Length: 409
Image (cartoon, rainbow, N blue to C red; front, side, top):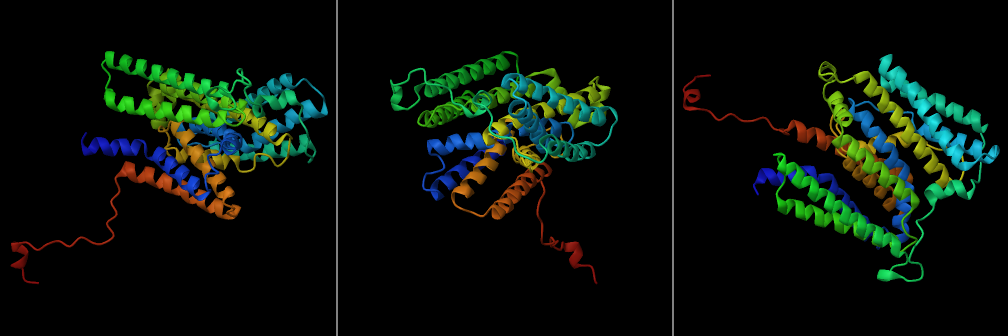
């Protein structure tokens, strides 16, 4: 393996290495509290909405560096509607969730129309949306907080998968079902990756060496089993973790293995060239913002169940967390570059920084400073690595040649 290969691999997995470093750092400084089963479960609950929003924000940024500033307000508005339907009006929780999601899609259609077809900049449309939807939240809730939600509603994201082997304590853990799920997922992942590897190889595509594939599968499978083993030692796998898993798998497949997903990357790379190539750029941009509002609606339901209330203050600065996670995860500020897995890593970095500093008792104002510096460093690393910027602070001294020495000044 030559130096170029090593450098490319380091560049590809840099954020993952940074994440591992942050985990080790806070695990030591918190005396092991960070990775205790209860805290790991809390990390999932605390950051579920960030991951969901970040996946949607990734697609917006892929289209050309566009962002959606209204997602925090949409989260609050959907929570407000859910609270009104269920708590104030006594409607069926399942029907109310469906109706809230439809309202979210309607919000996406509204914003997508102005952005895609009227060509108003996404920044302006979503900034207006941030103000409008926050105001509507205050109107719907009349400035008050509605609580509590019934258990049928809370079970969607605050519950845990029950243990099918209760009282048996298989493998020496509290929830054996969770560990079995982790082992099955690790096996399924390895089988899928191996089949994909040989499929690409048989089609003549460039593939990594079997050694690299084996190491990657070993590390990933071990990490998955380790995570589920930790969860199995608390109350098991949270229901919201299943929601996150479905979203991550679906959107990872969508962005990497579908024609529409490739068109989104093409749109972000060069909109004019994509349009001339037959890509329906307006329709694509419209669907991206409808999707963003849909995912923000899911995040609104998840967050309201975590609070067990519908609050007019919900969703404050959520858009900043989502945007930060996407950029830290390696997405380009100009669009066309970024992955779902990278976005997940970025969200985990933000979440672990928050959790670790909170455990250590660090002031929230200092936490904001640290997160801002991490975001700046991540984007700076991306820009520098792509442009191969060299920092020559001192002027170069040109050595005199023999001809120069003969010139009289």
